[in-house]
Length: 302
Image 1 (cartoon, rainbow, N blue to C red):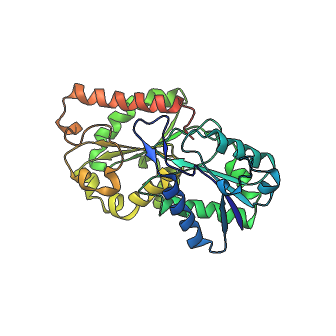
Image 2 (image 1 turned 90 degrees about the vertical axis):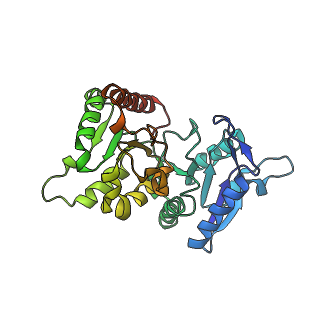
Image 3 (image 1 turned 45 degrees about the vertical axis):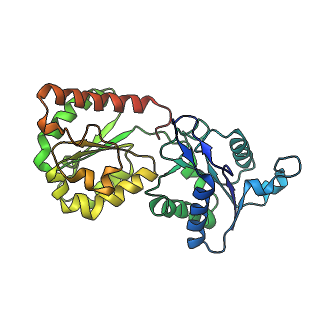
């Protein structure tokens, strides 16, 4: 299988995130190695290697590839130009970007993958290889995967039943968004007797645009939440573009739990909701609802 890899060939600063620089040679090395570990016969060629004496890539060169990978982390007109040409000749293309970046207009309505330092060697590369596997088996298969398929955004709420009062109050603040049809909100109270609950939770999280984690000592004490299922599900969800938003309810080991503390919390772990006044808690709930509404209006939510 012959793969074209379009990515900047040097370190680049992010145009949208202040003081953020991406080491694309190192990032592409990690991704290339991850692909070769699964597809050892794959021939991966960087677009920069195909430039002719005029500094361009000929149409004939693009025709030889079975698949194109395109990193759209930073605004790169040249990369987007050639990605557009690849799409124009009906070749499969997979877009991906850093989870910290602003996904560009060209692909923000398409399915795409996101990577981070925590996921690039594991969940991200696993999902990318799954997509490549589909292309290899059936090049037509990714057309449905990558086509524009806008759906109503969904929010997933993960919480301990001992904290149900916090969950219920948060739902009050999110209700106007549901009423307007802006979002569907999933919580485990929607699981019916007889349902395969683990499968239901996995499916709900994988389909969600936003995952709200109501973190407390009880949450952290749950074997299911912390040890068995949630961290790998969250990592996979992050790769697929889900926004992970922890809300700290009580003093707990959140700051010492690496699988969770890499996500920016809605409030400081030093000031959980349990020590706040009712007015302060309401302010946090309203802020969460506002942030979600703003995020839903942004064109780069998937």
